[in-house]
Length: 192
Image (cartoon, helix red, strand yellow):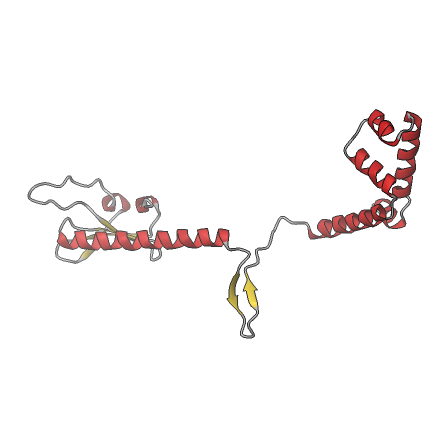
């Protein structure tokens, strides 16, 4: 359970044994508790209301005992509810939170404030253009592209295609030229 004495409250009270309250300072409210004795076996308890922003030092009596325990139980239950809701939200973000009147599902949408939407759109357009160009390549050119992307050694590429190292350089340059000459891709890099 949270330590409610560490929170800031606007008002502090002391509940007197006769049931009346007296406004006190924070220091008086949270003063160290006296040890239970055989004549007064009740522990020191407090009543916290974070929403209303006040704390009450309860008397060491049956009244203080019951109020303090009930308040502690309520606060603990509230903590569990909030904790459970947070866990469910983490797990169920992709599930509907309610239904519209016409039966459509309503989802919780969280906006990413750090996302640069324009950059995402442009990156997606460049990727689509590149995929379009790659789809037009022959199977050998496609394989060469994959080897270049994997940073394969020229010796390995020459052995794969049974060509010389000069042949590898020629094919790599030709492939770069094909990809670089696409008008859509060119538009992305010449505008900037």
